[in-house]
Amino acid sequence: MGTPAPLGLQGAYALGQRSGYDELRTRLLDVASELLMASGPESLTVRRIAAEAGCATTVIYTMFGSKEGLAEALYLEGFERFRRRLAAVTPRPDPYEYLVALQPIYREAALAEPGYYSLMFERAIPGFVPSERARTLARAALNIIDRVIADCISAGYMTPTQPRKVADALWAAAQGAISLERAGHLSDSSTYDAVTAATISHFLIRRG
Image 1 (cartoon, helix red, strand yellow):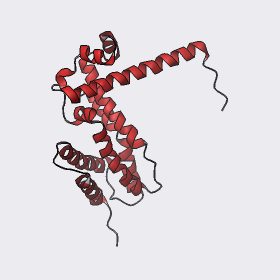
Image 2 (cartoon, rainbow, N blue to C red):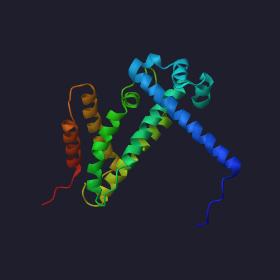
Image 3 (cartoon, rainbow, N blue to C red):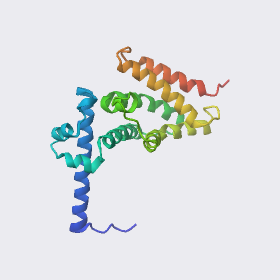
Image 4 (tube, rainbow, N blue to C red):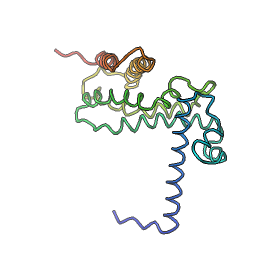
């Protein structure tokens, strides 16, 4: 491949603009997430978010269209952050080992992003319902687990079935334990580890 052409002044300016836009968008989402956790959904007014982020309200309307658009952006950003954490796990040559390695990372992601998590899974904003497109994109963010499960099936570790069936069962088990832990009913990861391990084991092919 040849050396990429230099950006030039106009290209560098456009790249700088995009970088600034992305940074401001991330800042606005983080401010909204923090307000949601600290002060509840009633704090998520465009005026309050703009004041906390140090920008004009018109910026928020330009980026997100409306308060509902901002809520959906938060919802999708939460799943994207989960995706990045899972994608950062070093792939293992053995798919079963890789699947096991991914499980604690999902819990870590949930506990590290409480504002996003509450919006993604606990209906933290009354009346907010993600669009069908947003739900599809959200589920796609977790496709790395589907792919690793498919590899486990191909390698003969798991009973042949739809990978999504296994992934959804694992997701349900994980979410149940995380919800109890967030509510203060569980003090550590032991129950999460047990239920996710048991779910994976349920689909394993018994040998010998």
